[in-house]
Length: 341
Image (cartoon, rainbow, N blue to C red; front, side, top):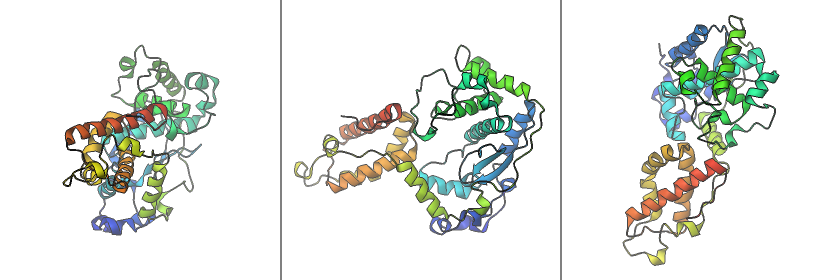
């Protein structure tokens, strides 16, 4: 049963002042605990006896070579999920289906940590060399590739061999994935089949959970929520594009070209922010926080240049959406910003 906390009714401003450890969160008292139990049952049903230490941390991860999983603190309570959405314009894992997918993925890493299967030649032949540079946040996916399974969004299996294995494990573990049918005639099928062969090999082999102090354990994190979100936004903001006046002039008007009653482009963008994010996020598959940060830059440059709306707002809006979609899609596919209108 979910526990009541004194900080639940605090304003966002006051809540942000608290340190993460002051939240005094417990998985057993959270509304996500039944979901954790669901995945643990899936493991048992598959014959795996991996007693994993699950704890509350600052993000999703399984510490290297440990039988443990960190679950983000903001997923453990509705009030914290609300704050996450406000600060980051999204809350990854708040939907039950997404949470289950993420947790199954992390159990894939735990399986490897427990049995060291990634050291095997056969594993490397199936998934690739996992000793290459590891930068999953910078990868560019091939959306239509059939060499990889689909579990977490953004084709995360393509990020690195370790993630490819974890995603394949997650698909194998999901009782509703119907992977034998869905991935029939896909090269990715052999990866899930290999996971299944490994599971049979280690069936019923008991593994004990990690002990001792865990990395980024919420119980000991002295970082305030305010600092946590500042750091998180700064990390996601790296390599955002700059907007060139030449591009913006093709969408908006210069002050001397407008009329007396012409509206400011920056004001329009602020009003239409939610609409633009809603349109662009599913179309481009980009994170809402990135789209919002791009819009912030666009608003700043428009205000700086005192750009105005043209008379035909409908045509302008179409051009703006096309420009932003081109910008975001090009980046996802090539890793480069700088489309030309």
